[in-house]
Image 1 (spheres, each protein chain N blue to C red):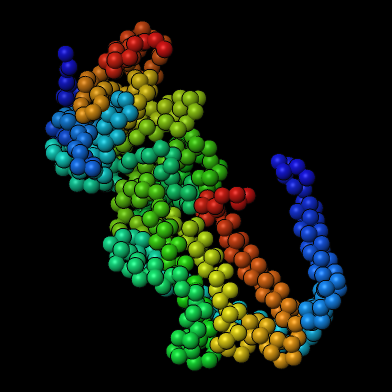
Image 2 (cartoon, one colour):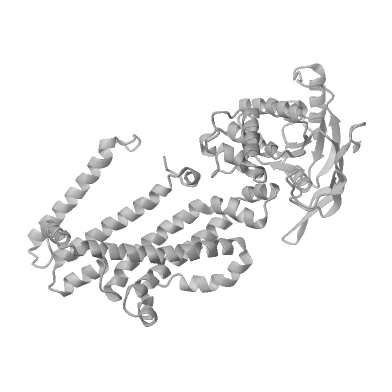
Length: 261
Length: 260
């Protein structure tokens, strides 16, 4: 039995609503249904992970939410307003490839701040340099930074324009497993400090259960929401607790994976 | 020398010197053994070069050649870079212009010499025109490719931060394409230096190309011919080295491999 929980957590303002979104590509005369009737509501300040196997349309869904793609049918609204394109109030964070290699750390963080006065901009840059722990690297170029530092830089560049939503597309996928763990707790720390609404795409079940308020499990081709799993564990999460393991194993079963390798 | 070990500092200078010395020796003995009366030995050429420097004509020739190249190349860059950026930015416009460009591009600038002389007569402007033609197309093509190779994540990030199309072009696409544009400029400068010599042999009466042809025509001074040819090589190398040093600038360095 497939359950669909589309309601946002009670008592909170709805930030993002996805209504009956379908997405169809036509390639070589063949129609590919990437998304079918996706419904989702995300409340203000919520951390939601979109989880699914590769090719399940989770990145496509994220791109429609961010306004880079227009759904074939259905609507996406943010604060009750239809999404018509990318917007500086909602920043998309790519893997670390998205930082501009021709700009320094300062230049990257200040990229979206050209409307501010110089002192304001410098203050904002300094604030986010500190928040992501890149002090001492202000004048460095991305080529001189490690993968994890570049990823933090991209998050800082996104946060600097003070968006109310962040879209992250497998942001830690290219990092080694230790750096990835560090980055997760950094992201949670930043999220708790700034309370942005975060939509986070991943194919890593542990990552989803460690981070999210709710995990949206998607099935492949055509991509639909299979189940939405609320993760009712307070941060910081004990990832060896019984409840954590139960939730994680539930999602493993949901995706159809036995718990053995 | 082990091919895996990084060469020592002295080796980087020493071995090329050895190779050059061997080549000069080979040249020297080839002239002696073949018994040629026309082709000069390295020593003759060295004397010829000193003679050229002493008579002060050489500096004027170098100055004229470099000036023509800089003007022709400069005009090509000033017109070619914006044109290439726009053609890369609007693929529809590129499709319109591309066939004409693909026909004009493979034509050697030398073939335009008669046309240049009709337009500009014998003189500086004909030579500058030829250099412009030779360097314009590589610059335009490098810019088009540079723009179309800009990774889409950069464009998307720029759009996400609310840039207008014009800002996107100047703040994202241009800097992202700059390393490739620089490669195109460097190739164009190399071509410009090739073209100036040919142009000066026909269309003007000064410059290093003129020096080569004039040394032959007035008294078959092959020592001066070879001296001038070697100078052309050295100055071409210097121009290229100046350009390559730009690749080390930090906002550009990311776009080049193998640059320490």
